[in-house]
Image 1: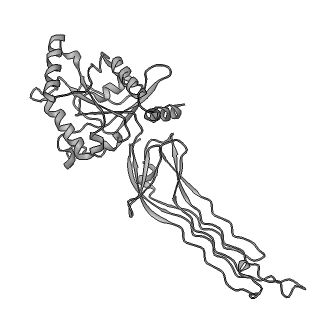
Image 2: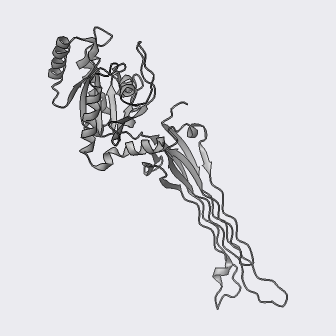
Image 3: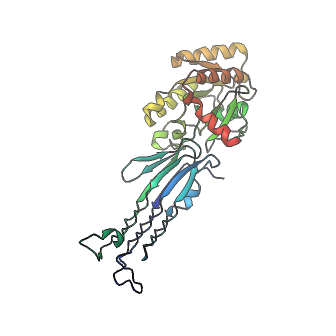
Length: 352
C-alpha cells in the first residue's frame, strides 16, 4: 500500500430539519390547537482514531464527506428523526486543521479517540412551542440550522519515541531492521527510503519503545532538493533523535562531518523546536574498519563536530553495539515522564 501522510478533504454536516406549523383536526375537536413538531438534528461528522490504519490513502481519493439532513417535523406532535452521525476513521497521530482559519480541530493521539470536526445543524421548532394564552393559533415555526462545512487538512505525524536522522545510505533502515521486527528495504547499492517505517524495539520482556526511520535528508532539502522536508513532520513527536553518520561513505570524496553539519542546518531551517530536541551521535558501519582506524576516525569526527553529547559506534549490519545503544535509549526514555513512551504502548496495543 502506498504511504500517504497528508490530504485535504471537505466535510459537510447535515442541515437540521424544519419545524412545522400544524393544527389538530379531529371530529368533535374543533379547537384542537397547534401540534406541529420540531425538526430533527442534522448529522455531525467525527474523526475517530484507529490504530489499525496507518495511512491517509483513503482520503486521497474520497475528498468530500457529507452527513444526512434531519427530517422535518410533522403534525400530531411528531418530531422529525435526527440524522445519523458519520465517523471518519483515521490513523493514530493525525492532526486535523481547518484550512480557512488555521485552527487545529483535533490531534488524534490514542486509539478510539473521537473528535467533532463538523457539527450538524439544530432542528427547527414547530408551532407547538409558540402557543400561549394570547396566541391560541400560532402559525410560527423556525427553519433548521445549516450544518457546518469545512475544508480540512489532514496531516499524519507518526507516533514514535525515537527518530532516525541522517543522509541517504547512512544505514537507518538497516538499523531499524537490526533492533526491531520491521523490515524496510535494504540493499548493497545506493538508494534511499521513500516512506517512513516504524519498529517496536523490545529492550526486555516488559520494556519497549518505538523507533521511526524516515527518508534521508540532503543539503538543499529546504529548497525542495531530494524529497525535501515532507517527512520531517514524523519526527515532531519523538523524544530523542539519533543522528546516523556513515563513517565509511561509498564516495571517497564525501566528508561525513560536512554532511552531518548540512543535516543539522536543514533541520533548523525546518523547525527550531525539532532542532532543539535531544540528539545522539551514532557512527555506523564500524565493521568496515579495524580497531585502530575506527578509534582514530571516531575521535576526529567528534572533535570536528565539537560534539558534547552521547556518542555510539555501531555496525547495524552485524549488530555490533546495537544492544548497548537500545539499552541506553530505553534507560533514557525511562528517565522521562510516562508520556514519553506512550507511542510504544499505542503500537503494542495495535499489534495485539
